[in-house]
Picture (cartoon, rainbow, N blue to C red):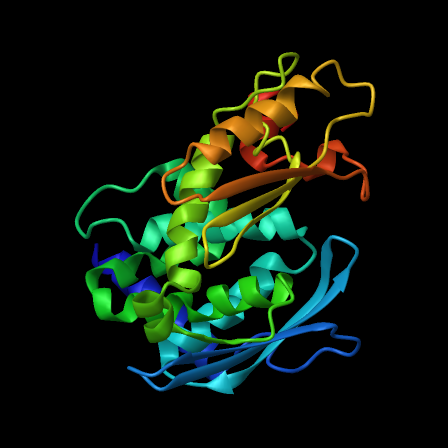
Length: 264
């Protein structure tokens, strides 16, 4: 355990003193601001979004070591990924740091996070979870094109991103119960879900695609997603949009899906 704590402290200190991507990238076309009033952390996340891919990302701001280190490692982790892949990484990160202290973490979960796994130590300091997640919630707002200031406190108390994130997690869980009948992998890990948006009223919008326009499940799968998302607690209305741009490719699959299908 001491070795894990030492690594946690080493990585946090290194990335807080020497943060990666600490700048506004040229050509950035999405920006959002985040604020944690309890700790005084501020962060501006700048994204250069090319179609569905985070071509470049950087951040600016000030705050505690955990906030800055989390933003630094986040930018390293999501650069080059699609919006959906970045969302999946956030889901894994959030699941890790909000798990009860002194409970075992799934090795597969830790493996999917790479260096971000060192933040498992934040679980021992619940008050610091907001510091660690601020940059991630701000990135989410930037990717959704929301010109708002993400505040850890107002979000919790007035039903903003923190509350919608809970609903979004439930929606993603529901979507993960949907399968293409020809492939033994759920459609979320298969990479068919391009975006899941929950607005403050609880309205859910799912943007998804299919492996091809001639997919045998073209009629049944979107209807199944619509039905299951609409049944999620907290969702007031559900809408499913089918999009074909960018087209689906196996590169959009999660590592877990590739492993399941023997592609790794």
